[in-house]
Image 1 (cartoon, rainbow, N blue to C red):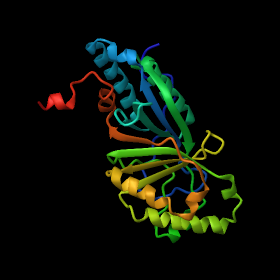
Image 2: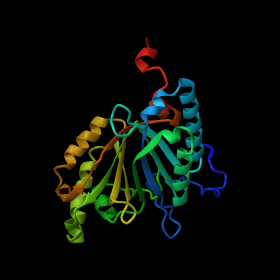
Image 3: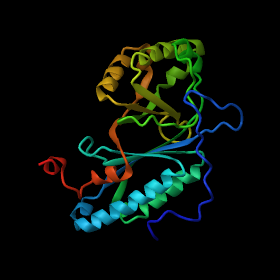
Image 4: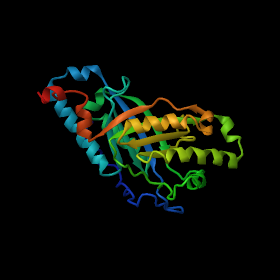
Length: 266
């Protein structure tokens, strides 16, 4: 089995390119399957000869870039930020099979044989039932169903589960609390929220992913949201993954095998 991308996969459906805030209605709306996959490299890999590590990084980078032509694919590093994972991919496509095949191709590379899948979350996009609440809070444009990254410097994502008693509340009461929740979010325009749904697909109910150029803004937003009425119905919102967006090769270089930044500047 080679590390090259499989050639037997049928042609991919084109990734929709619609303006931010535009929503395609009807049966042909481009809903995406979304995956966040966190990898941990085995310690044995760092003991390989440097030229072998460089070759393996180049091979995996080529596979990631090739899949990036067929789906939404972004890469991130958490080296030095979390001890239980090193790099993460954010993938989105209209075809669930592409999530499966791209993961197979990643693991089929030489470096892939040293990667443990530490965490993997799956979800899908859909219109929120609280769209009216968001509009009442001042958001004039609906979020698109298709995934369109803002490509900001930092990316934070976590699984989210509501308490069951939340769903027993009247719809108008839940809508009111979500409107107040959204109004807090409006105070932090530099933090973009990407919400997707996992009901019946994975262990969590939602995946909440944030793009920002300021981790401090994100932290302040999270603290402010703790004071909203809706937050008391949170069952679980961990683990939280704080990462830095990089190209595939840059993210893989953080695993090791290149001169450290402090030595490179010396």
